[in-house]
Image 1 (cartoon, one colour):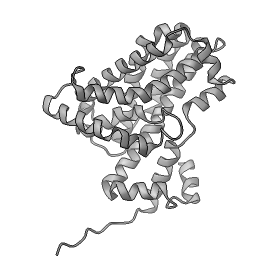
Image 2 (tube, rainbow, N blue to C red):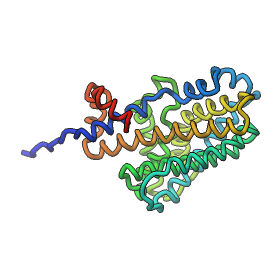
Image 3 (cartoon, one colour):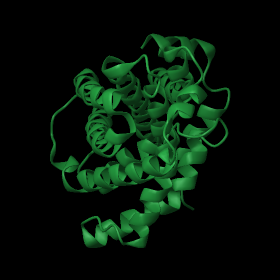
Image 4 (cartoon, rainbow, N blue to C red):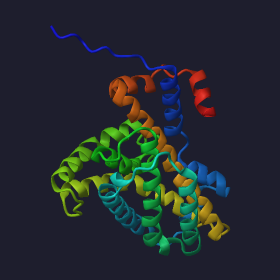
Length: 275
């Protein structure tokens, strides 16, 4: 008879890390923080956008994610540096945000691929700093998956719900890329993955665009909004790759049960907020 595997409990440090991940992944949506920053509801910004803005956003989001997927597959695994550089990438994102602050919707098709590529590099650095191997295709796809996190309403944006919704398309895309070795936009598996992530990413992009539409912001405000934009995805990446690191050690079911249950104490949350 086979001996059942011994499942080790999460250490105090791992519990603290999981508490931190939960805190990051369940922080208020970016839209709430943007509205607080500009001092008015985002609906005001949406009302100032020109007719047909949603089509422009959807097209730009898909193009930016397709470019990000190409970057992830082709180059992320070649980078060997150690820790993450969140501040450096925030500076770059802030600079690109100034363009959007001046030119608004017209600049989105140019600005979004640039800011998305910057964010992807930062996400990859965070993944590496959490011990994940960027040489693995699964890790690189998980970096792109981060753009789907935190982009719908409270129920739909649940971390675990989002991962479950993307699971099949992620697997299909991974199988295709393992066979072909390159991104092909026309391939059904790639189109489904980009479409699934874009539907969530586009919501966050829309919120960012609405905040930038408020006239008082201008170029400086555009940079500030972009800092919040990249900060949101850096938070999502940190939480995501902490969870995946713990899953590799303890299994997804166990980590999810502790995450969703009472296994994370209030004291652990307090320690996480200070770490």
